[in-house]
Image 1 (cartoon, one colour):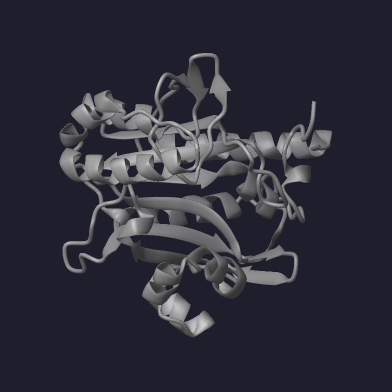
Image 2 (tube, one colour; image 1 turned 90 degrees about the vertical axis):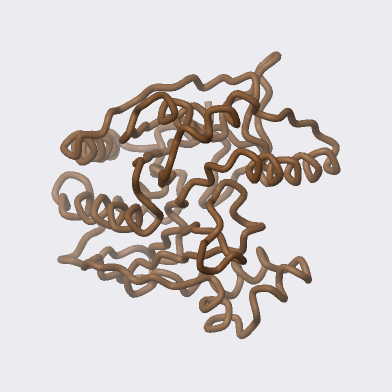
Length: 303
C-alpha cells in the first residue's frame, strides 16, 4: 500500500501522463468497464459480471471509437484479468492505452520512448528512482538517454538463449525460454523494444508486408521488466476473424466459452492504418518510485 507521499507521487505521475497526451492533441476517453463480449484471447481469463465480463483491456471499445472518426485517443483505466497475481501482476490493475491513426508500430515506439523520457525528466515529483539520466531499480542502472535500442525477437532468442525462435514454437517452449533466458537481459543497460513477434503471437497485429512470418508487434523492456505492448493494428476483418477463430478453439479446449465480437469486426475496416499500445501504469510507478515489487506501488493490495 502506498504512503501519503507515495499517493502524491502516483497522482503526479497520472497528471504528467495526461499532460503529455493533451499537449499532443490526444482526446482522453472513458469507455465501459463491463462488456457483453470481449476480444477472444486464450491467454487471458476474464472475470464474469452476471451476464457480462469485466474488461481485460479497453481495446475493443477504443478501436470502435477510432472507427467513428477519432484519430488520436488515450485512456487510463482499470483492467481485470483472472488468475494473475505475483511480483509483477495483479488481477486488477491500471492500464494506459493509446492509439494513433496513420501510424505504424515504429512511429509508436518513438512516441512511447518520448513519453517515458518525459516522465523520467520529472525526477523531483514523479521519478525518484532517477540518478541523473539513469533509472536505478534493484541491481540495474539503466540509461534513459534517447534513442532506445530495438531488437527483433529472433535476434534476442539467438543472442541470449542460443536457440531458433521457430524451434521454441514447435516445441511449445517459447514462453519458458523468453521468461528464463531472454527477459532477464532485456533493458538492463538501456531500454529496449523487442519487436517482430511470430504471427501466432500477435493475434491483433498486422502481418509484416516484408516478412510475412512475423507480426508488427513490440514490447518495451526496462530493467528486465515488460512495460508496454504495442503493434500496427490488423484491420482486415477476414484475417482477424480467422485468428479469432483459432483463439476461440483454444479457449473452448480449456473448457471455457467465447463469443465472436461481431460489432468490433464490422468496424475494423474503418480504422485504416493505425497503431496502438498498452502500458502498465502500476509497473511504471513501481520503477519510477524504486519499489522492489508491484505491491508497494499500488493504492491497495487487499480490501
